[in-house]
Length: 331
Ligand code: NAD
Ligand code: TYD
Image (cartoon, rainbow, N blue to C red; front, side, top):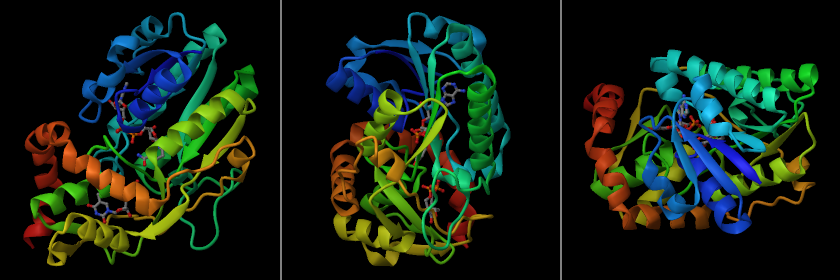
């Protein structure tokens, strides 16, 4: 296939690009704005085999340049961090909603298949059981609200214009190349450095952990075998509460358990996410990496790849970290 992968320099997008180029021989163009979360280094293993366009998905000219010669668009590009969306939602509306609209128009004009990468957070929180694709959409944060808005717009292009759309909703991803604002890489790098480990609230919030390569395969299966207009959930094989995740990271890194610090909870914090992936399993997808094994692999990767995260930890990330955690950790 000839794919336009938007947001392909980020954590999940770059994993998907490596998989499609190496294992499937797809021709890939990446369109990425290279925000703080996007890095050319994430694509270095396939750099000579892809075309890279730096630009924003909300910019129709950049999209027109990038999409030339492609048969499908896969959209990973997004502002993705819930805490940043609480502090300043505007950029989330521009990228996640307006940007999706520009991409849908590009797909409509050219008759291209369109896959939207989405999240379990559009369903909101669930105490027991798991969300299916027909569960109501009840997003809690500005991040998940903009992802929901984008999903609804995607579905409207199927119903109104018969565009071949697909939506794949993943649960919380973890693995190599994840920007260390998210729980798992943040805790790994803090534990390795002997820094404090800021757990929100009582640490009892539960996430359904999905190794990033499993999600990349699930998105590929949805793109190739999904039925137009349909949504497919892609959930991890294991769930775990945050405090247990942090304790496992402490064991794997040999850090001091006394580094754990309970800090003020995130406003509107969803208690639990859980996805049923039966529909995607019917297309032949299975999660291959259990959480314990994936977490050990992830810790090992961060141990061995300081070249990747060293520059992040000393740059603008420091300012973000101070702004977001400074007061809570000093108190
Ligand atoms: P990420 O933050 O690591 O990467 C996002 C990428 O998008 C970066 O390369 C960034 O430069 C690019 N980008 C941001 N704004 C852009 C714009 N306006 N135009 C072009 N490029 C832009 O994110 P991720 O964790 O890899 O998530 C990728 C997608 O998967 C997102 O749509 C996210 O909502 C979804 N998702 C993430 C998770 C998760 O646990 N991380 C789970 C389910 C779904
Ligand atoms: P996060 O990685 O931000 O993903 P999401 O909010 O999209 O699920 O957070 C995962 C869980 O970890 C969530 O319940 C919030 C919690 N958390 C902390 O307790 N401390 C932290 O420093 C961070 C970043 C997250």
